[in-house]
Structures are given as C-alpha cells and as structure tokens.
Image (cartoon, rainbow, N blue to C red; front, side, top):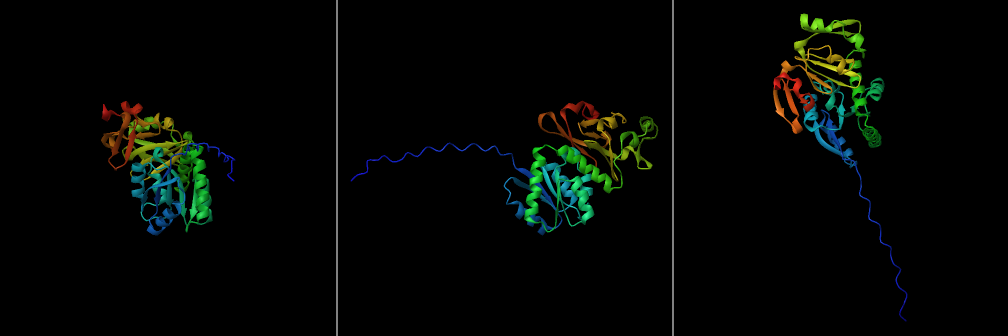
Length: 289
C-alpha cells in the first residue's frame, strides 16, 4: 500500500555568516640555529592565523627584514653570535618595532625581566602548549592595540640591560643644551650620575615610542625616558629635522632618498639604515627642497 504521507520538509539551513577574521599575523623568526627555526615553523603551522613571512639567522639580517617585511610579530633568539637579541632591538626604529616574543635559554632572573618587557618568552626547546599560551597573549596584545606600550617596554628593557636607567627629561638634558650644541657641537645627556656628551656628528637618528627615546649613534644606542617633542626643542631643526611623528634624523647623514606611496619617501643614511619620511614632515628636510 503506497505511503501517502508527504516527506517531512527539511528546513533550509541559513547561510553561514561571513567570517570576519582579522588578517593573519605576519611573523618573522630570528634564530641562529636552523633546527630551532625549523622546529618553531612546524609548531606554528598548527595556528592558521600565523603567517611566517621570513626567517633570519643573525641580528643584521633581522633588522633588514623588519624594515622590508614590516612584520607584526617577531620570535627573537636572545643569544646569537654578533649582534644578540638586545643589540638587534636597539637598531630597529620604534615606528617599525613588532611585537616580540623572546626565545631563550636564560635563567629565572632574566626571564622575569622578559615577562615585564615583552609580549612573552619561550624556553628552548619550545613546548607546544606553552607556544599556544604565548600566541594567545600576542592575539590579546594585537586586539587591545597595545603595540605602542609594548615598544616602550622594550626600550625600557634595553635601557636596563645597557646599564642606563630610564630618566626623566629634566635629569637627562642640561638646561643649556641648545647653547652647548651651538658652541661645541655636542649634546649633553645625563646618564645616571654622570653627564655623557654626545658629538652631534655621531648621531644617526633618534626615535621614540611612548615615554622612551633612543639616540642612535655610530657606537651605541642611548635609551632614556623623554618625549620626542621635548628633545626636538633642544636640537637645531635645520640639522636635525623631524621626519616622522616618532623620528628625528641627522640631515647630514642622509645620502639618498627614494619615493614611496602617497607622497612619502624613504631616506637612506650613510650607515645603510632606511627611515620613512612622512608626507606631513616633508618640508622639514632641507635636502628635499
């Protein structure tokens, strides 16, 4: 006997909502050990929101790759031949500084410093569960847009490790700094209990993040607590023009300019470093007039 019952009508499934995924986190891995880099690559493959854009085996290459690739995140080995992890950070302009996760075999005391100054740290060999926790911190950091504060923390760590305490501006700069610049071509900076007189010709560029400022010279990077605007008032704008909201350059060290997008340019210094010249600051660099 035929079954006259009509088959139950299956309700149409609602269309799946369009995912609103954030773009992947562009990631750079810096470690002088190829096996360590390979192990980290394999573990990161389990996290689809992580896009590995490059690998480096030394600090100099890392600095160049950060500039070229503009990663959001960098896994940075602390102990490397040549420029170690801290020296590498000191050579990265603040406006290019990615979030940093240290990869280290350091002891407990160093790890405490990393916890206070970096997004996170990982001990070698890297544990998958610990890596997942670290990446969750990275995601939270990204969502809260805390990158500027993170840069400040990193610069503060650089100051601690170099033996230079974070100073207030009224302690770091002499009241007659401008006169001294004009008379003997030096910038006087208080470094703890002593005054460091920095020859202006040795300054390559100055950059800042938050309350910290880095003075990059031929021989060292001085780190102190200040704002870029306060230091800008102490320098001759014809010799040290501001080229970005967080960067001042020694105009005499600029050897080349090349155009970029939307009226911006890149400046190459005689040391090989490249810095971005923002459109709003273009008229401050005499070289381009």
